Every structure is written in C-alpha cells, then in structure tokens.
Length: 437
Image (cartoon, rainbow, N blue to C red; front, side, top):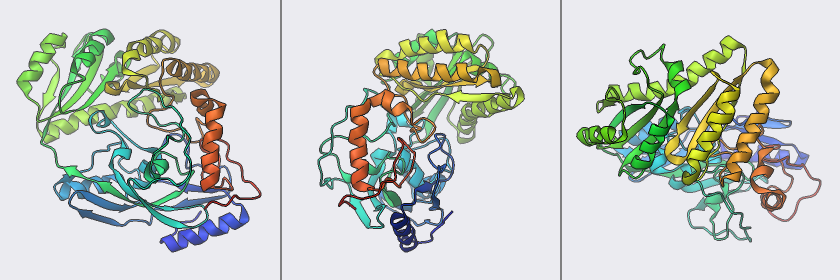
C-alpha cells in the first residue's frame, strides 16, 4: 500500500511497477459499490494526500484526494455551485471523475463529465500530462455506439472526435491516474422548493413523471415504490395511509401554488409534503437516504445478502422496465424487493434481499434484469460503473468486437495492462509494450 505525497513520488511508484510488471490499483475513498478499488494482486496506491484546493470565479482546482463535500463547500462559500451530487459526499474527486459520478440532481445538471475542464494525468509509464477540453486525441478512436439513455457508465465512451479529457472520465482508473482536475462552477442557484408527493400506486406516479419531466428548473425527480414506503413507515409515521408510491421533487425557485395545481391534476394525495426552508428540505433528503439504511438493517436482521441493479432504459421504455421489476423481481422476492431511484432519467435501482439458500436465484434475476435493459435499448450500469464485481456485464452490453476495440485503446495507453488490473475486463500483464506512453 502506497500513499504518495506528491506527483514525483507517484511517478517513482508507477515507474517501478512498470519495470517489474506489477499491477497497480488506484484506491479512492472506498465509497464505490462496484469493487474497482479492491486489488486482485500487486500494489494499491492511495492519492489521499493530493489535497490541493483553490477556487476562482467560474472554476475550481482540486487534487484527486479532495473529498467531494469539501469541493461543494468551497464552491458555496465562494457564492458558486458544483452540481454533481452522488450520495456519498466523502467520495474523492479523483474517484468521481474515474466513475463519471452523478446523483439525483443529474436529472437537471448531468454527471461529472459535464463539469471537467482539465485533467492532470499520470500515465502508467510515469509520464505526466495536463489535458484541457478540446485537445484532440492523436490516434484513431473507434466508434462504439452507446445506448439511448441519459446516463451510461459501462466501459469506455469512445467516438471519433472526442478529446483527451472525455477519454479518461469514466474509465475507472484503467487508462491513467488522475492527480488533479480543474472543474467548472456555476452561479449559486436560487433556493429550491422541495416535496415528497404520494400516490395510490405505481401507475399514477409514472403518469405524473411523464407530465412533470419537462418542468423548467426541476432539479430532481426521484421514485420510491410501495415496499420502500412500507420499510420507512416505522421512522415516518406521517406517510399517508394508502400511499403506494412516492415521487421526490425539487425545483429551483419553485412556486407552491403551481405545485398544488399539479398535484390535483395528477391525482396525488393532498397530504403530500412540501417545504421551502433549508431544515425542512434537508429532512426530505434524509427521508430518501434513510431507505438504504433501513434496507441494510433488514439485511443484517435476516442474515441476507443484498443484490442490486443499476440499469437504465430509454425514457419511452420505462413502463416496460417497471413491469419487469414488478412482475418478475417483486414477485420472486415478495417483501424483500425494493425499487427506488432516479425515475426522471428512467434509471431505477432494485435491491433484492436474499438469504443464503437464495443466492443463485437472486443472481439469476440480476442477470435477467441486465439482459432485459439491454433488450430495451438500455444500459447495464447508469452510474456505478462495472468495477470488478460486474465486469462480466461488459460483453452483454457491447459484444466481443467492441470489447476488443476498448482493449486496443487501453493497450495504447497502458501497454502492460497494469492499471486497474481486473477492472472492466480481465487486464493482462503482458511481456512487451508497444511504443505508446
């Protein structure tokens, strides 16, 4: 385990690894769920000491080890705003770039990729380069079609004409090491109106999503199913009786009267919750974040294992995917299947709780879910990436030819296959490099 304090120390580590053909795993803050930071062999390198942080009008420069929450706080203290908001605010900036992290506000603002202006990259050879937006890649990049979804985090997002910055974002630490980044900041937005809107069931909630998706300045549009609400009732006794689904909304400078009209038009419960004040808005966010904690507590009490999905589909196919969740997954794991997440992007998470004797059945359903998403034109991972845990889904998403095209790009930048060994695909440590850095 290495924790270099400078780019010079990192260079020496990478050069020694390169000479010895030693695999390198770059470890972020440990908040990811796909196992990318878990080494199969070789050396682990943490960039936790890379803590540079400087704010200027419209931009911020941060070392790879700076936690996201510090970036967000520094921006706000300067009267500015950094939009990406993955749930784990202790995630390192380097990790959020490596995975193109998003979050609930990505419905309006998009993921990390949109806000990266420049990257400092240490290549596997120890060569340091700074790449800025618009700097053309100096080799032929294959064209790999991506699914027609608003979010996608599977393999390399390759297309002719892309720049160097885009190549490294979302590559999960397999093409180069991010040591620092220049990030775009936006003006601090006006205070939002937030709400938790309750419905009788899934159909009414999805009808509302389709009505509300185009509302201006809508920051987020999140969903919780009936099982999720049931799990939260012991903590929130004011969840209305008979509520079978909920949507969480947040709109910058929203108008409460307009939302009351929308609720009536969508057949939502009059006892839905709304707030404009900071503490109340924070309670709504806590309501959403309480669900994973309740699920984890149930996992512990049952002695079960949690199996989760990260699939997304084109917006037009969302009802079909929800039907699959309801008719296949929720039936198979009644009372232990929870559907929630980013419905505005047609990106919902499913958590299955499986005791020891049901692991094979749960694993099979997760794979069936991924196949169904791809068949509907979607993605097997919208935001978490594949890491090592889900690397087997890369071929399901793309096929063999596309994977070989990705391997060609990796070999050009990492000839020995040392970076992120086992992440995305089974990287091989090879005997002889090519001529690239």
